[in-house]
Length: 40
Image (cartoon, rainbow, N blue to C red; front, side):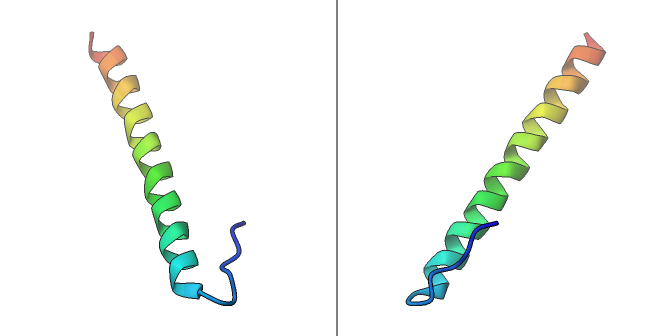
């Protein structure tokens, strides 16, 4: 778990959200690769 710094919680929140978006992007790429392998 990522902890937001007490001195700047907004920056920590943005960092946390960017990491979540990155994980979602990787999951989507994995799903697309699986579907591509299934179709071909």
